[in-house]
Length: 499
Image (cartoon, rainbow, N blue to C red; front, side, top):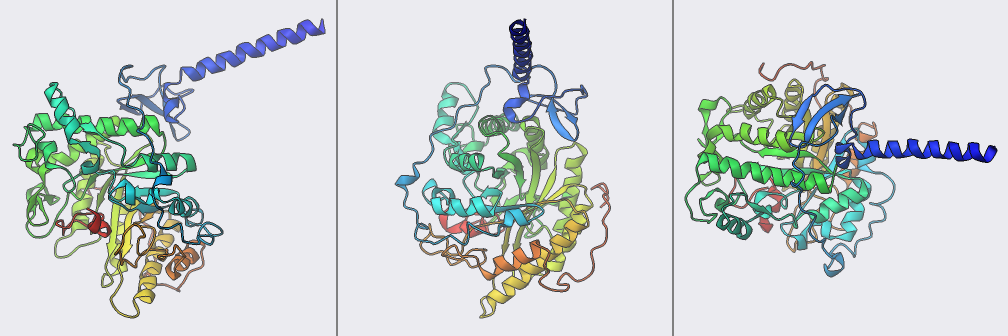
């Protein structure tokens, strides 16, 4: 009798287990690392992959199946780089101190990220096993300074072949950054997608009728199709193969300009029309100022709901002679009306003669938009005098003390990313930069220790930040790496030599 009861119990458990397994199989959103909704049927957002709701503040998939066509499956990742075939220039460094003890990521109340330098797989930060070890211990977020940009991802030869088949869809090549995706996935590190649309490092052939460098522009309708195909393929590949890794995208980069008459003032937010030595902003040439909103609409359509969409720009704190800060806030308000943007990316290239208090004042204004603030591409440049290091430490300390005070006040500062791992980047023969947190031998610099002290709540000074921080209430936003020729673009300015 006992044996029969035991067999009956086991059979019941097997049925229950099978039912749970079947329920999991029906959860279409689980492949993205997002559970299906257990109770709610209220649709908060619809994307290409399906409808989404929220339970306990977290996104969840609604329904029994995805709305993505079954035959629309992104390609698998290309082969990874064999690192044993790449000479690691940092292998000679003793990184014991860098990979043990204190960690920036663990000490910070926000994500602490680092830029991945390099203009090719051969000199990419992720191609160094030694640098990878330092990143694993010190950081929980990375940003490619170059290798995710359109010029590195779009494949001209493949796109021309598509045209011959009657297809306007561009072909994408993900081999330049798949090593970083794999590294992040295996080590619990997030990656900022940088960048979908930028006027620079976008190949001209992508905008022409025959996908040829010297061809005529296509019409706006054709270009919008190409843009959507490009973003759809890009996001789908990343989200299917590396779910949860890239959960932030710089959707549009540097669409605002306030100097040298390189802008369209009629929009109210100084839309960039030119850059560098009057090179054209091809996105503006074809779409006009609407290219920014169009891009964000497409990105929202294909991005998973837990992926944050960011507008990223430099000189975000400049208010004179024209306020770029206010122009950015105006654009954010336009995007926010359609729920298209989640965060402002404050590229943070700061010169020795610039006032950190003005930078922090801009943080106060962006807090009022209600959007998350992400400090991107943080680079405080050094003076050419003997006291350069002490002054650099002072500026970094003032900045981080200001940020920490604001975090304690409840500011929504989601991440800080320093844009490079080490001074004298070892993959370059002649890099003389001195503004990073680790030296040429991957030893912690004095500035590293100063920042760590602040992150741990041990203020380096009594008040470097000027006035006390006032409470900032949220209000509607309406209320108020570049190549050598792109002198206006701060993006990837430290990587000029590799382009």
